[in-house]
Length: 448
Image (cartoon, rainbow, N blue to C red; front, top):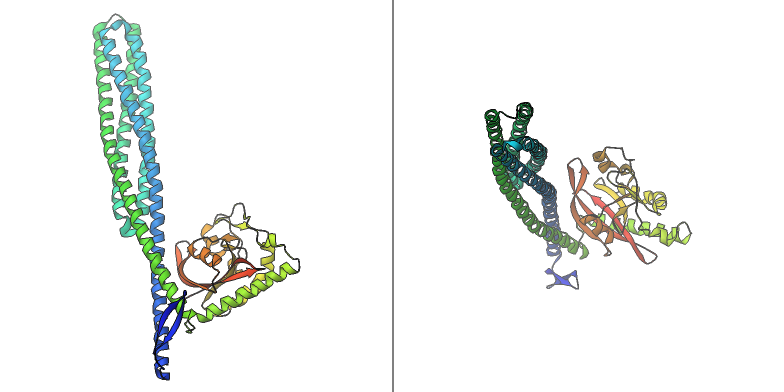
C-alpha cells in the first residue's frame, strides 16, 4: 500500500510494502475520486466567494450612501440653526416694536429681512430632505438586493426615508407660513406708513404677526425633533454598515482559505503524477505557453520588436471605452502572433471557454476572436461580455495567473459576463518566459 506525504513543497508517494495490481488500481481510483470531490468543493467555494463579492458591492454602496447622508444631515442642521436664529430675531423685533411704537417701521423692515432668511433656510431644508429621501431609498433598494444580509439595513433605510419626508413636510409648512406672514407684514407696513398715530390698530397687527412667528417657531421645533430622530436612525445605519463590513471580511478570509486549500489539494495530486481530470488541460496550457514564448522570442531575435516594447507597462487608456481599454506598444505584435495558438487551443475541447496570454500585470492585449468585438458606445453590459481585449484583469484570479511562475497554477472562480450573469470556471495558468524574463502567463479556462 502507499500514502501521500509532503516533501519540500511537493507530494511524493510513500510505499508500504508492494501492493498487487488490484490494490494499486483501487488506490489510484480512490485518489481520482478524491480529486473530483475536491474540485466540486472548490466550485462551491467559488460560488460562495462570488456571492460575498456581490454583498460587498452592496455594502460599499451603502457606505457611500452613508457619507452622502451624513453630509446632507449636516447641511440640514445648519439650515435649522439659521431658522431658529432668524425666528428668534423676528420675535424679538415684534417685542421691541410693541414696546416702542416709534421704531415700529424700522423693526418691521428688519423683521421682513429675517423672515426672508427663514424662508431661504426652510427651502434649503426641503431640497436637502428630498435628496436624503432619494439616498435612503437607493440604499434600501441595494440592501434588498443583498437578501438576508441587507435586511436590517433596509429597514433602517426605510425609516430614514420616512423621517426625511417628515422634515421636508415641516419645512414646506414653514415656507407656506412665511409666505402668508410676509403678506401680512407688507399690509401692516403700508398701514403703519399711512396711519402712524393709531396705536390700538398697530398693537393688534403686532399681535397677529407675533402669533404667526410663534407658529413658525413651533414648526421649526417639530422639524428639529424630527432631525434628532433622523440622526439616531443615521447612526443605526452606520452601525449596520460597520457590522456588515466586519462580517464580510471574516467571511472573505475564510472563503479564500477554503478555496485556495481546495485548489492546492488538486494541484498536489496532479503534481504527484496521478492522471487527474484536469491533467489534459494542464499539459495543453503548458504547451501553449511554450509556443507563445517561442514566438515572442523569435520576434525579438528577428528585430520585429525591441525588448523594451515587448515588456511595455505604459497602458494608455482608450478614450470613451467602458469597461476601460488600454493599448501598449506590443499590441500589434500580439495581434499578429497570438491568434494562431490561442484559436487552435479553443478547439482542444468543447469545455474550453478561452485561451489567452496575459502580461505580468493581467493585461490582455489580444483575446480570442469571439471576445475581440469592437465596443458599442453606451452599451457597457454588452461590452463587458464581448469586448474583453485590450483590458487589464487584475482581480485575484487574473493577477495570480499572470504572475505565476510555477509549472502550473489551478484556480476556480466566478467569471463576470456582464448584466448580472456569471459562470463558474476552472482555470490553469502556465508561465510565459521570454529571453530569461517572466513576461506573463497563459490562461486556459474551462467548464467543469
